[in-house]
Length: 263
Image (cartoon, rainbow, N blue to C red; front, side):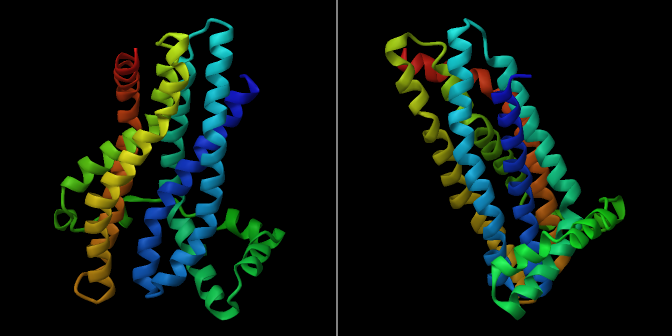
C-alpha cells in the first residue's frame, strides 16, 4: 500500500471515529447535567478531528496527482477511503459505551481542577491506558432494548444519512472530477471540494441540529427521558453509518456532475 494512501486511510478513520463519538456527548451532558463542561472537554477531540481534516485534503490531492502522473484511475483507492470512513464510524459506535464511562469521569475531574491539559496528562499515564483496555465495554442489545425510537423524528435518519454521504465524499468527488476534465479546468474542479462540505454543514445546522438540540434540551429540563436522547443518538449514529455506505453510490455520479459542469 502506498504511504500516502496509508496515511489517508488512518486520517479518515480518526475523523469518523471522533465525529461518531460527538453524538455520544449529548448522552453525557443529559445524564450529568453538565452540558457546557461536556462540550468544553470534547472540543479537545474536535481539535484532533480538525487537524485530521486539515491533513486529509492535501493527501487526497497528492493521491490524485500521483494517479494522473502514472495514468492510473484513482477510483479504487478513493473507494478504500470511503471504506475507512465506514470502519471509523463502526469503531466509534463500538467504543461509545467505553467512551462514555471515561468521558463522564473526565468531565467531573475538569469541574474539580478546571484544567484540560492536566486531564490529558493524567489520561496518558500508563496505568490509565491499561485501565482503558481492561474495561472495554462492547455494545449489546440490552443497551438499546425498550427505547422509544418512535419519539424521534424519522426524517433525521434520512437527512443525516444524506448529509453524511455528501460530507464523506464531497472532497473526493471534486478531486476525482479533476481527472475527468481537461487540464485547463482541473484546478477549478478540485477547488469546488469545499462547496459540498459547506452545503452538508448548512443542511445539518438548519434541519438536523435544531431538532436534535430540542430533544436534548427537553431532556435536560426533565420534559423528556434520558432514553429518548439515547434513541436519538442511536438513530443519528445509524444514519451516519448508512451515509458512509451511501457515499459509495454518490461518489461517481457527483464527480461526473462536477466534471460536466466545468467541462
